[in-house]
Length: 558
Image (cartoon, rainbow, N blue to C red; front, side, top):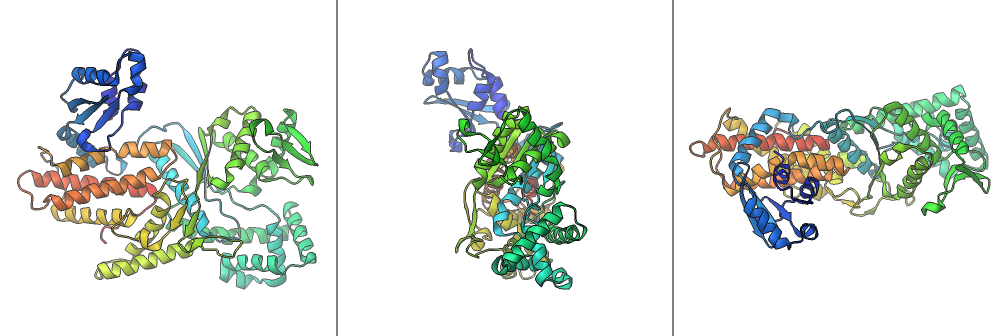
C-alpha cells in the first residue's frame, strides 16, 4: 500500500491540493515520532491559521482504524502511525507472491529510455575511470527495465580520430599479427604508447595518411581497424560479463560519419551556423556559454557534430521519452551546449536529454592520471578484489563449497557497490579493505546477510501460512523497511541515482540483523516461528532483488 497516498486522499483541505499534501508527507528521522509526518507550516498562509492549529485540526478529524492506527499533532506536525500488523500481513503476502518481481512497476509502460554509458575507446584498455559510467549505467538499465520501460543500452564507441592512423602506422613499423593476437588489447595499447614516444615527423605524416585511408574506405586500412575493434570488443566483453552489464547498440562515433551532414545543413538553414576564425560555430554567448564548435577551420567535424547527429538518430530510431548520457561531470559544459543547440534547432525533445554526471574515482594512494603514467586498469582492480575476497573467505569459511565462484560474486560485487553506494556526483576514493568489509556499509555485508537468511530458511522452510499477531519493535522495523523497497526503486529511476537502491539494501540488512540477533526464529514458540520464517524469506527475496538491480550476484553461502 502507498501510505502517503492513503493519508493524502483523506487530508485534502480547502485551497490545498492532493499533490501538495502528498509531496509534503515525509518519514520522520526517529520512528518514535511515527511512521509518516505532515509538516503544516507551508499551509499556514493559505488556511490563515497557525501550523499548530492546522495540525491539531487535522489530527482531530483524521479517521483512525484500518491502515492508520494512530494520529498525533506535535508542534505543527501531524504524525501518523501505521497499523503494523495489517502492514505485515500485506507486505509479506506481496513479497512472497511476487518474488523476483517485488518492487517492480508498470510506471514506464509504453515509454522508451536510451542510456549512453561506458563508451569504450577502441584499442585502449579500461582503466578505473571507466568504473562509474559502467556501473551507474548498468544499474540504471536494470532499474528502468524493472519499472516497465523499454530500455536501449548504448555503448557509444570511441572509434573515430587520427589516433587510429597512428595505431596502424605503429603496427606497420613495429607490430606483427601473432604478437598482437596473443597480447590482445594490451599489445595494441603498447604500440600506441610507443608511437607517441618515438614517432618522428615522417611517421606523423604517415599516420595522418592512414587515417585518411580509413575515412576513404581503403580495404587494408579498414581491415586493420576492424581487427583492432574486434580485439577490443572481445576484451571488454569479458569485463562486461563479470560486471553483469549488457548493451543493445555498439554504434560509435564512426557510425555517425555519414549522418552529420544533414545536421550541419539544418543548422545552416535555420541560420544558426556562423563563421568564426574560419571555424563554423553556433553562438551560445547569449545563453552564458562559449560557442559550440561544429566544424574546424579545415572542415573536420568535432565531438559536438557527432553527438548532435547521434541524438537525432536516436530520436528517429527509438523515439525515446528520455535519453540519458552517463558521463563524468567534466563534460557538463559540452552537454549543456549540445542540449541548447538542439533546443535552438526547434527540437521539442531537447528537454528529454539528460546528462547523468558523476564524480571521479581514485585509489587511496592518489588520483589516477594518464598524463603522469599512473593508470590503473579496471580488470586489475576487479581481479584484485576477487583475489582478496577469496583470501577472506578462506579465513572465515575454509570448508565452503564453490569458493572460487563465491569469491567472484563477492569481489565483483564489492567493485560495483563501491561505485554505487555514494551519491553519483561525489568523487570516490576506492579502498580494497573498505569495500570488502563484512561489517561496513558494503555489498559484502548485504551478501552475508542474504547467506544468513538463506541458512535460516533452508533449516526452517518457508511456511505457506502464518499468523502475524502483535509485532516486536525489531519485527516492525523490518516490515516497514520491506514496504519501502518499491519507493526506493521508483526514486532511483526518477533521480537517475542507483545509490538509493544500494543504501536501501544496507538499511534493510541492518534492520534484519538486529531482528536476527534479538529475536528467536527457529526456536520461537507457537505461531511466531512461522511468521518469523516468512519475514526472513521476504527479507532474503527483497535483498536479492535490490542487489540484482545493481548487477551484484547473491551467493547461497559465505
